[in-house]
Length: 149
Image (cartoon, rainbow, N blue to C red):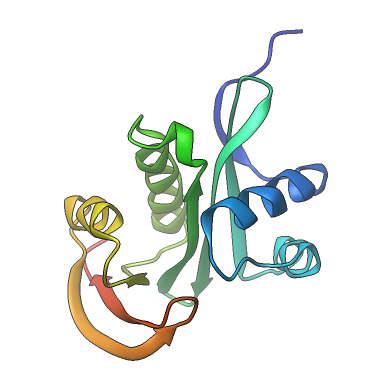
């Protein structure tokens, strides 16, 4: 059977690969237990991008009433700038719209220019700063909104 390449909803058996991806992408990675509990949350929806027999990226969107929050988006470093993040964004936004979401927020490290540019390309705009939000290293978070999803 051929492997399906692309974005799909995350399954429980993907959790250990996603946990490894977390360790490679974030200075404060989510634990396996946190990922599994989130996967079982009625508020959170996880997506993975799979190719070459492995998970190359994943994302999480939380929906509460008519608002969403992008909790996570990560792509393995050697596979960045190949459109995987964009495919994950497309999946989250399509899903959010199907659930009646009209606005989505996110937080991003101030220095993460490539991620900020991706979000800007989807209509997100910076609206606030959370001082010292991130650690390892300490850095401000830029809070961005797209209020016209």
